[in-house]
Image (cartoon, rainbow, N blue to C red; front, side):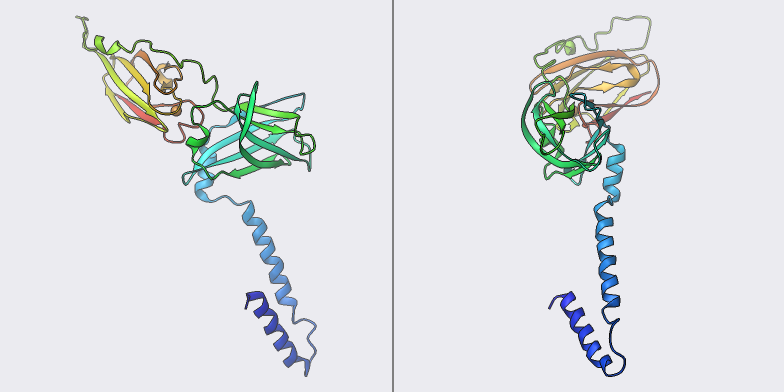
Length: 286
Ligand SMILES: [Cu+2]
């Protein structure tokens, strides 16, 4: 017997007993108001993020959607990991009230959209949240991807906003620059200083670097040789203005810089949400 059936039968039983004495107009009263309360709770749950979800949402770097076809509709897309699965949250401004707008992640770029890879929850009054049943790496898999919003279900052929998720994916695919920098490592001919040339070989994959920590001394000239075994990545260290090209699988690129400050500095991959997905490490300068 379902809870509701049980509740009704109890109410009916109570009613039968009470009928003799006082009638039972109010026998359903409490049951009815509880049912409404449950509905309100269900509604609230729809809009309530878990703590982990909220933290990930707050930490995620937004992709900025730009307007298309004079829609005046712009916004942000946040794509982040929640318990191993990707979640996508859109916040659009300039969206028409009460109009359900389809949204997708497509193959390709905003300039040249390919087929839909992932359908997202329709944008309604500027908001959309989708829990995709795939890991982040299924979205940021090295192929160009774009996220776009369509005008309405009736006019889904009209695009109103879009953002490229992976940037210029082909740039740097075939770079082999300075891979041999290794051979020059530690051949320091500088006689007047204690600073050294230091070279580190780092392999990138979805979503980590093979070195999580690098230790050097102030004044060192540091070379990072980045190679990529999986996905599409770069290596970026903002404080010393150092960054490799974004490279595809099997490619490599190098960057050389002088560390003129002590401290702990975070390096990371600037592609998509890779940094948030854990693609980072520390350069410690002593
Ligand atoms: Cu990356």
